[in-house]
Length: 369
Ligand code: 13P
Ligand code: SF4
Image 1 (cartoon, rainbow, N blue to C red):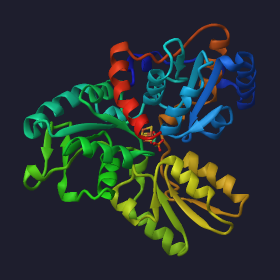
Image 2 (cartoon, rainbow, N blue to C red; image 1 turned 180 degrees about the vertical axis):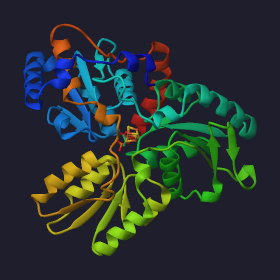
Image 3 (cartoon, helix red, strand yellow; image 1 turned 30 degrees about the horizontal axis):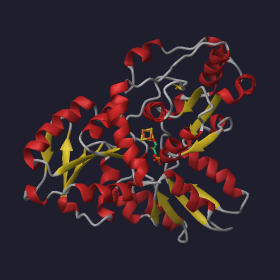
Image 4 (cartoon, rainbow, N blue to C red; image 1 turned 60 degrees about the vertical axis):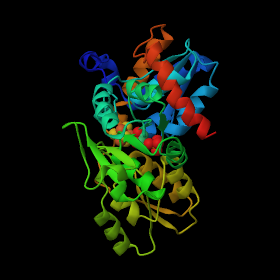
């Protein structure tokens, strides 16, 4: 979880903030070369171009969780993404490997919508209502403590890249699931697996209550009332407007978008799937993409060379503010420190939390080999 004390302390020397981009890039190049194979730099697809340029591996959440395990020789993993991703990397790598996050304030507003304490309260109430018929399923976009709670209760983690397989498995274990923290990924996935909307209830963490109209015994999915601040900015009206302007356009969106947006789109999928669909487009095809605009902008540039028109589904959408906290000054600073033998911003998950979170993570990885 985002460490507020760290937030207050998180200032880097002004010389980095004031330096020119080219000078910062020179520092990053030099220190990467100096650190060699001892260092691996991972970046999520939503990072800025400036950061992606230096990544040894770029991926979505599922890809990065898998790829990090291929770098056994690396002493240090600099994770250009958000806090829960760095925690996951720490839990999936050897004890002696260090995971660093260039800016400790790079949290995830969605992950912060479900704390382990809130989950404990919810679980207590839901178990009283549904006895042992319920399994917790947490999006990988959650804190290590939440993952550990889920592992302790026989549950599993999930990413947008394997939601269908993992949720299908969950239904072979128990009659119903609690899906957290993203209500949209939970609703979209369950709906496409044949669960009717009338079989879905909502858990409200702020008021600590469950809302459902009907007979509680019919509930199959309990959705946690969380959302992604980036993907909730897409609306059906934007899709309709796009189609009015370009009748032949293909609209593709991420499943963290609202269900009415996913329903209206031509296709939907994880970040990796959206990229794959874009690369498959042919010359003169036209696509509108509903996901983080750092990525859409990059795809637009790449596909222009192939004669494919890529549009931002919502050009006014704010990018992920926390992903964007990872920038050239922070990356240059952390690498300078590392090259000088000083380890800054290490993300360390406690042994007990790791042990139980690994249960949920390993189950997911086993289901998506
Ligand atoms: P994926 O990387 O699973 O597509 O998730 C998107 C996201 O919001 C990451 O924070
Ligand atoms: Fe969190 Fe959404 Fe940003 Fe991903 S894009 S890190 S889910 S706020």
